[in-house]
Length: 495
Image (cartoon, rainbow, N blue to C red; front, top):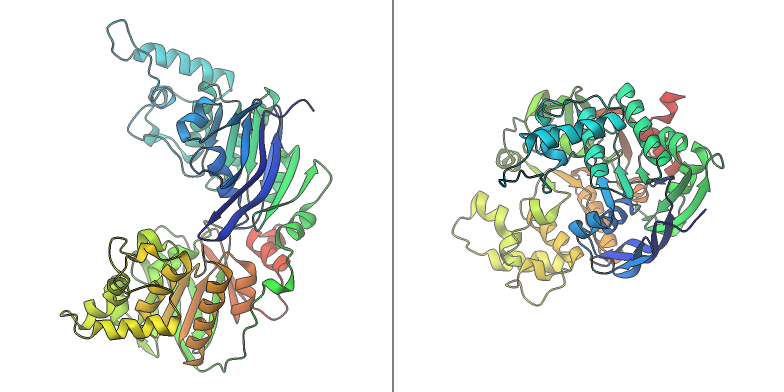
């Protein structure tokens, strides 16, 4: 091959002490589809953000067309010729197709107004070149998901992109739509554009990729040429780990069935979920990003509307209409995104830990300080004072602070959505220990996790989520990472 058009050289990135990328070096060439695969948390998203200028690496450099990129930003990345087509469409619904193509770089008439007619003509010519059937005057809101994805590609090409990154572009598309979009991707490479293609659909990766790179735990595992590997090899590379990464969970006595969920259907979902959980048991929920795990947990907690379904706790029907009503009836939720959904960033540790207890039973804040100090000691939250801002703590201690607020409620059902996301190894072990303590007290624990060792180490059973549906529940005994990933991808059904 000739010189790469884009290179990452020894790039590393950490968040709160947790490594997202570790010393990754990759080359991307014009006229090539370079596919990236890896399980959730492998580092793919961080890599995209660095290339798109949204995140700065801690170490290493990015080289575009032979020039080292300094401190970048999204506009600089676009100007350097790097365009990203995200899974979530980044278009303005209220504008036309042509308006979106020229957004930010509008063509003007001699009088300074937007030259709508010329924008429509140039958009039509670009669409014709790509053999894409779209009306330049149509409103984006009226387009199908596949048409919107295609429009994002058109927009990238109009900006003279040298590199186009595709992040799960077919995730929300039907089979025929996905095939059509993949054809456009192949056409881009044939025209000399460097394509970076990320997908959980391994058949797409094997069909499109001229080269295929596997990332795992933020590291570059291997790069294969087309035809050098099959699905089984990719899955093995994606999930293989040393036994030292598994938590040694002690045996906990399992009690009687406490939680019964029947046909619980989140708003927008096509299928209801049914499962039962016993006291002292951890039911894990596994699946790829977008499989519907978080939506199901939010519906159970009353943060998302349900279409149908019944929930029983200890034999009584639980009617949850809001998070407050869920808390009052013994449910709590540790959310995946603590910064935007759980923490009060401008408030102290004291206020953050005591908030739920105060809202429910102690509006005059009497006795909150000794209660919070007891939680801080119990969870070994490292701080100078409970009066300091919660954002001044490390990621792991922030997570334990959010965890501490639920301890004060003595809930019956604890829902953990990615409980150790963004925390260091030491904090992980402490959080795991707390979850085991809940089990020993006979609580019901539901855990969503993208960390396969975490799922296998802590769960008694694992619910497999895919395409918004709970497909099956499997006992952990006899499961391994490769089997789980095969279930998440639906490879057995496909076979």
